[in-house]
Amino acid sequence: MTDLRFPIGPYKHRAGSAADHAAWIEQIAALPLRLREAVEGLTDAQLDTPYRPGGWTVRQVVHHLADSHINSYMRFRLAMTETYPTIKPYEEKAWAELPDARTADIAVSLTLLESLHTRWVLLLRSFDEKDFARTLNHPETGILDLDFLTGMYAWHCRHHVAHVTGLRLREGW
Ligand code: NI
Image (cartoon, rainbow, N blue to C red):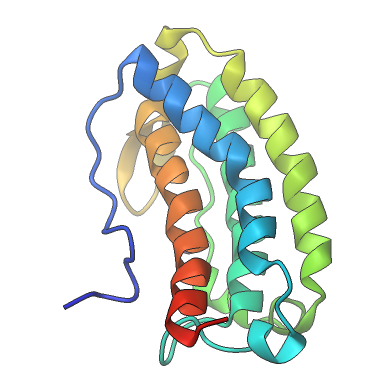
């Protein structure tokens, strides 16, 4: 029984080696292109189809990746420039229901993600291994380090692309 919400499974963290960090950064770097490939040729009606019953539409998934990764980019920069900064959680489900996230042309967020990931990956590739031990305070979950966040966001990229590719496979699109 496949859970359509978790096509590649839920995120399970294990502390990363230097090779893991490099691999995770490559997965983050690849997201803008992987996402473009995943949505290539979809019609507006297909983009407005939920990736699973009751789930976000493909359009919402694309805009969610921009919303999520803007927040993530800020969190990495805060963690690199402050000592144990407290970050701001946000209501991702409510963000995805805002009118722009439901209706905007996905080209806007695809372009945004290309620029955003270029900056984010420049930062990630500048890290020494000790930088992955830097921490931030998430008010809901407590202490998080950049090792966890890098692995989690690499998973997040593949997780949402798989929502789109899984839908296309099931629908024969
Ligand atoms: Ni997400």
